[in-house]
Length: 133
Image 1 (cartoon, rainbow, N blue to C red):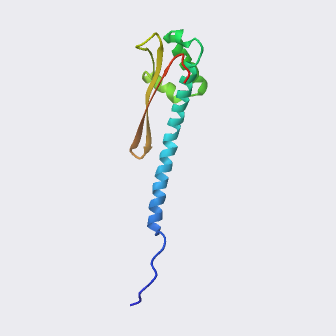
Image 2: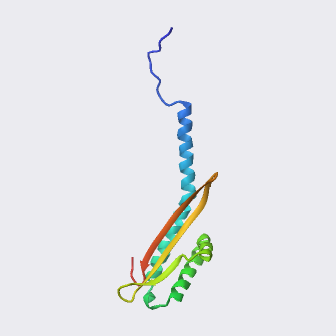
Image 3: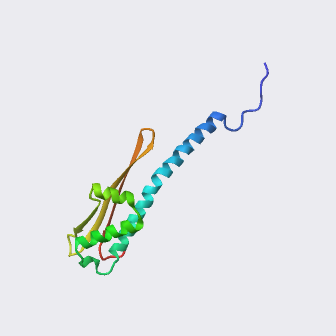
């Protein structure tokens, strides 16, 4: 019987295939979830710019909602516009102290990923109207 004195070096074909499969799963997750986070950053930017408008804290709720709709239409956030029709995403509320107002966005993104797997991402952001962030 011949004895091989050198040990195997490197990975086998099976281990390379497992690493490749894990890499493909991570890449597909990033590709699917990434746009949701980009949209959330757009929502945050939109809310910050609405809150920084001069005289916004003296405006009524209808004006604030009109500004939100204007920014959504300009930025082309169609998935958010569709979700707004189904549920109330943006809310303007009075602060407990003083006469200021708070604009809050709270929404969920539920999308199909692979096979019968889906993911759910929950976003929430709040800004005080009239203050720069």
